[in-house]
Image: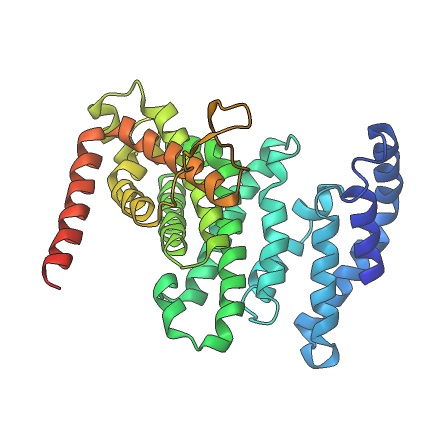
Length: 349
């Protein structure tokens, strides 16, 4: 399994800059013909674990998941959408703590497929069903736990593993929503769609955003970077959708009686203030401006290399700019309330 995984990575990941697109296409076509045997092997291992977990080592199951994940971006789509492999991942492996992170990585690869290739409509609809199933399973696993509160409750020796889970879970949620945002929004605003199905999708979308908010409040720079980039994407999307809409259109979208953006209404109604508070509280320092005198005696501004902190500041600044444009009065009042709370805390010292 490890050899197969490394083969996929060597050909299609590490060699992207060293082989031509025609050569890569030829290799993919060749390996596609042979992938049936690889898929059967992966499927056999997973089936054996499901039916007889005592007869197989967990290390082999983990490597099988990693191998399958490595092949996910280029294998024939029928192996993903027209077999039972996704159901096995969601219903049987996602619930197992030992395999959860590797299973989430596989599902994240599937969630990002639409951003890489054009999918048939049937496959796109299936992606929404996968999103719902994943959310239902994760809700049953998390059982109402607030993710950022749980971080402070777990023993220090387990925090690294918990951070890894939260990072991968955050990537899964943000990838699903970011690459399917138009599908989700279109389905929620489709008056011809089954109302019960629309209600389920809207609830799962809202819960996914709740999880991202919780993940945003975990004191991990890596997790927060993923969340900050997602909020930057979502606020930009909301701004593009709501720039010309009227308040009545917002109300209609919330009632799911309009083809206007449901996500825009949902975000402004439930998540606007949460994102503002999170970003104001975790805003990194901006790029410092230092004026110096060069060798010729000229006064110049000293340049700094871009760092992750400066990049994150730029991302969050764009997010806050979009939020201010969406509802400047509301944002201004919220920032004043936050500052007032801080002043009150200092006054009590």
